[in-house]
Length: 291
Image (cartoon, rainbow, N blue to C red; front, side, top):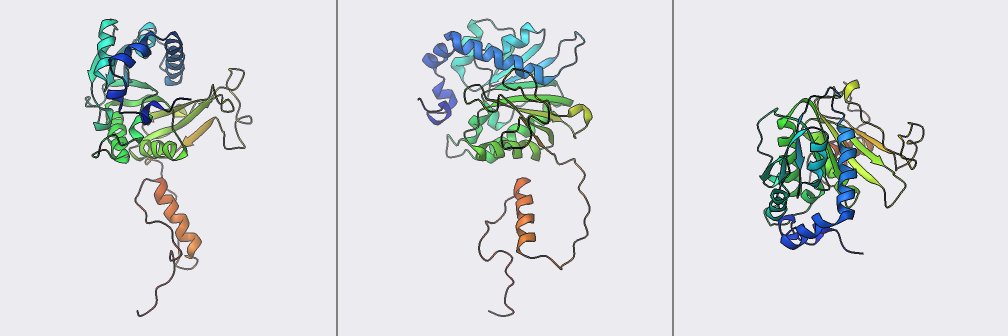
């Protein structure tokens, strides 16, 4: 089994001329990209009013996912870091506008101009440090911050991701939550190792009834009920809060501020993305009056 592409080389190098043409000419890849893009567009939940929207395709590659957007009557702008991929997209005469850029440095688009955004198998690349100057946490912050700004208020972004482990998943979620997004993760076919797909469904703005997270698909291809998707670690819908959610006011007295209370507070700060000192045997230990 081959290793993950993001572990072999930076994207602009891995997707050189040879790999870009090989990727675009594969009938299997074309079918997978079409299916993932259709599902992302479904989760985007755009109004069915016949009005074309301006969408952003992040990590558009050679335009395979953008073709799905065009077929559904939308205009789109594609961003990718690989010049070879974009050259093939130009050869294929895709209908979208193409931008060469590194999403880890921000998207560089005007505020509020994008009606919705999709990304297929791209965001997890930001979790790797391909250069000495790369800090994954800062690159994710720059990406999600610029994505939040360029989306219209209430606009939604659907990012299909392949996190390598739970740490990457939490890092991506925490980064999105920290800049103000509401939403969560939708998992299709959670119990299938081959068909399982994760989509980060984010809404620009505070959570509300209209921004609730959709339900993932089960083994029969239909949406599962809440009863079917709850009760274990493989839940199909994992919700996250955002910084706009009002915090409950609690009266805290000095009494009861023991080790458990301190550990709980530190964990809450970690989930917000704050830098917190590691837990040790000295955590919450009272200092002596003199040294």
